[in-house]
Length: 195
Ligand code: ADP
Image (cartoon, rainbow, N blue to C red; front, side, top):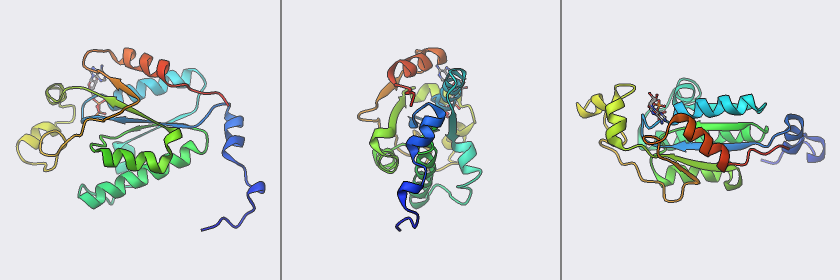
């Protein structure tokens, strides 16, 4: 649908980026449950905040509890889940906000869907590569135990596949590196741009 307002009268993304003195970007973490996505994202957000940058973390907790609380884990619901997440991310990015997304996003198709909606130029894919044995040993939320008992079907890594990202922008060996190491590597590799 065409916007009814003439575009020269509407504030543009660049106007907002100028106000914030930063550029919007989506930092998209993919990896198994318990691999460390949220832990690293929270530490990264703190560092960015210290530098005076405006950020927003989106993860399963704030998204599935709210905007996607009517969605389950069927194939069609997973697609709708990622579509809404990506659309919300795009709104934040277009407001100039550094948007940090933590979702297992287990397949290339899902990650590409997100990238296509958000736009490749605004999308950085970070693969948190922690071996499944470590994730299962940590079992932060007790989900691996439940999946092993058959109480959760289609649990990524146990009875649903995780496709290794073919071309992540950054790969973190989060079982070998500390959280601080991971944050340092991200900050070295992404240009957090000032508008
Ligand atoms: P995810 O968001 O991928 O499901 P979480 O961040 O919730 O994973 O859980 C990862 C767990 O692993 C946390 O308990 C965290 O403290 C621990 N952990 C240990 N070492 C690291 C590391 N280097 N990077 C990230 N998390 C780590």
